[in-house]
Length: 388
Image (cartoon, rainbow, N blue to C red; front, side, top):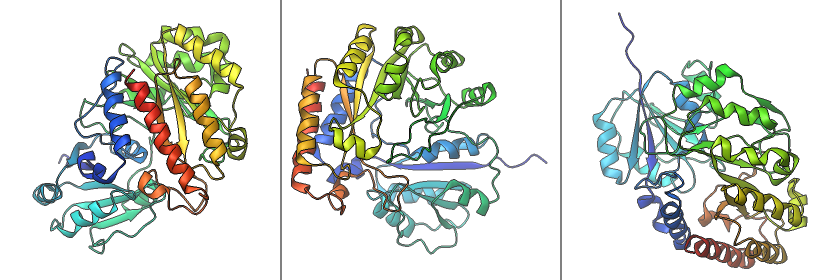
């Protein structure tokens, strides 16, 4: 007798629910970013759902299962769908901004067949109300989930953000880890390239998209060989990569090759321009002169540059914020946009959620007024960039 096909669903929350209380500038920035960057190949869905990283691993864990993506725009509609359809597993990602939404869904569930799995996101080791039902499970790691439900952990690798539909930018990896050891990151200085078989495994579950996101923590740490590994994937529409300026400086002799491998966008991990802040993070960085050379070179090859900037770094000061804003304005003609995120200390028990509404409650932020001004200034600056 043929084994029953396993069916799983991922519940992701629409910004139409989550963004009701978020900063208006944040919403405007995202709207304009996708509008401006559509020609590059970014996909804008109607809901701005942001799939968590562990969803990648679950997708590969259930490589042969039937998968479905449920976008929650209305709590009652989602409850009705989850009660009517008997999935084997349904996955939620619990962060500060979705915890109450998940609790409200669980309250209305009367489906005793499906196992409802709640994964705790960064900083979200929290109680979920109404989670006492026998088929509700909450885990902090994928290992916990797999061990409890006797799920094989073989062939576990990061794959594209869910594999349920085509209107998203798929994510692939050609390396794991990072040679750097920044204090805010989960890497421990170890780095290795993925094998050919690992790369081919990703091809089998990655739908083609307009732009493929290369999730390598620090792209080009493997040099030219890492660049060549992109040839295994369909690069007819282009790639976006993320890296540290120091890594590009160390590989400056091959930067001219990036465009020939169809790399369209490079995200640079800047985080801050304040020297003391960067030192406190253990963040390798380059001089402003070298950064200018790198960005100008990328521009000359037709590659868009995005600066990654971090909010809420422990020890940040008003002087540091002013320094960062001053240098950002100096680069305004050379960069495409900013990617603004919140500080997340993966290695600490005091982990921080990436939700602006909760950022200002953290104890290490001593000058909340200065951070508030910086946040407004940096979103305003990005809005100006996107409306040039």
